[in-house]
Image 1 (spheres, helix red, strand yellow):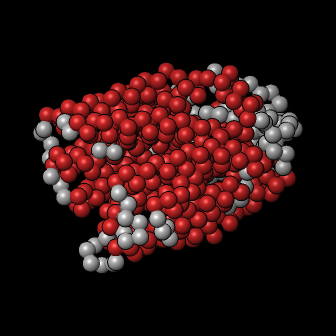
Image 2 (cartoon, helix red, strand yellow; image 1 turned 90 degrees about the horizontal axis):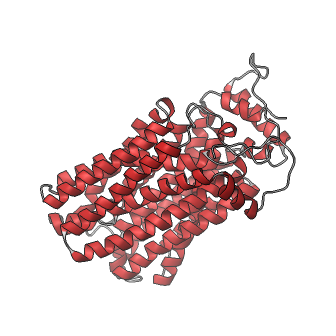
Image 3 (tube, one colour; image 1 turned 90 degrees about the vertical axis):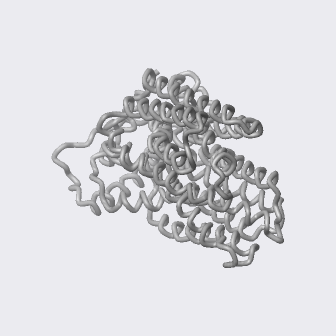
Length: 474
């Protein structure tokens, strides 16, 4: 019998939670930084005397990063459930640091692509271990907004990446083979500082109690209570949970659990992740070419239009996040997905009609992503909350990988073909398809979504080690 989850959930938001959020949530800023740098530095990579990458090689290196992220998410997600959150978010940050530092020292295309794949593996692994840890420490009344803001901070990294690229790529400021190396080196420097901060973040007590280590969990929670000032004998006793000692669940056990007991939740996670991935690729794969080919924006000025779009992406989760805890998950997730689809459809029709210019096009994208970013962040929140603790990191990794494969690979392939046609009709049709998928995901959420607001994680999905385990929701 343990009261650890109940005691964690009753703790008020504190300096400890801020430290945890900053030390772990930096992952999304690093990802945004890396993705933006890789795109905005394309010209410098092409002009580099050492690399001299052509368009095909730049595209292949982006695919290598994506492939690394998928493999890293699945591998490190499984290991995070098996060996703990703390070990893995240290290992994954080291993998990221090695990858981005190696990228700064790349000497040819093969080495550049290999280092980008390693960087992606570190970032993909970070997503799984850290989403799990943050959710397991956050009070239920705040879990939605905190998770959304952290996932939305990807766009702070995108803004940083754009600013770094503009500063380092200014004509005549640095030699062409030095600017892009310094840009990637800054990512490594930022990650190194975070590595030291993470030394003071403890293991998840929830993970410890399900792996037969209740004494360690008790020590961590008691230290948190002392720091925050919660009395050791509160007037209202925290609820208890009965667990049984079992071995590590095998991959077969986890797969059977997802396939038999959580079918609807698995379907929901797949739909939400794939729809948002396709939506983002629908715009960002065409973003620069639409500006240059249809609005005559010079290629070296296209990056400036990223800033209002990135601000819209971050403002959405920041301003709408609290509503996911107050109004509730079902109406907010369904509503943001559907509304983002409607905005994207309208944007596509206006683009097809030729009534937008570069500024109004960027404004339309910003409005769309103000809502779509909250929806996309809620997909990670949903898959993290919906499954038992022992499988949480792996579940996040599986749905991240599946959504990335369906939306992140199919999307660029489709839009590459549409761009080849060079017609507004083709690109607008692609926007329409992305809008349809977002609206469909919103409808799916409305009918089979999980009302998780203000509920302990163990009430949403009972641990596999619970003495009275019953699958939740299906």
